[in-house]
Image (cartoon, rainbow, N blue to C red):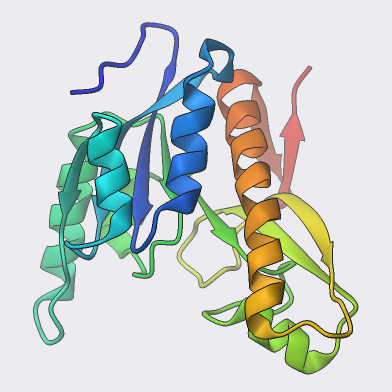
Amino acid sequence: MNQSGPDRKRLVVLISGSGTLLQALIDASADPGFGAEVVGVGADRSKIAGLDRARAAGIDSFALPYRKGSDRAAWDRELTERVAAFRPDLVISAGFMKLVGPAFLDAFAGRMINTHPALLPSFPGMHGPRDALAYGVKVTGATIFLVDHGVDDGVIIAQDAVPVLDDDTEETLHERIKITERKLLVETTHRLVTQPWRVIDRKVCWDR
């Protein structure tokens, strides 16, 4: 079991796939100056590489698949309970492909963040890189935002741009965005757990 140090913030990371964003956070937390460590990992699929990464790092993890047609509210409540058991200071949706429900959002309001592979509010939803490419933009990027009850419309915390190349495909563009996304997530998480901040009129303000 991964024990959190007394002065380090506790992170719970939600994943659905390979866990490259998770790995970036695990690697960053090896440095005590990062200010936080991953104490728990949750997934909506059981046989994924991201869970293997958690186990390899000695991090407690769980899988809670949602079966189509089952009680979505009950699934949301169980997810809430499992994440709450880790006593997180910050919950990070890192490629988690399920929308959490009211119970979860109420429990972790103001301390759950998500990443998105586009410059929100442009191109929300499941296919940010594809939609940006189809629209013909010259610049896209990655966004970190606070999760709320909407879809990809929470308060924006940080963004970084990625140029769109003339010969880009959805796959090549997305791969370059992922590189930026990992770096931005690590930097933003570090800042959130080490600096005072607050939200005023949809703007994250960093207190000096």
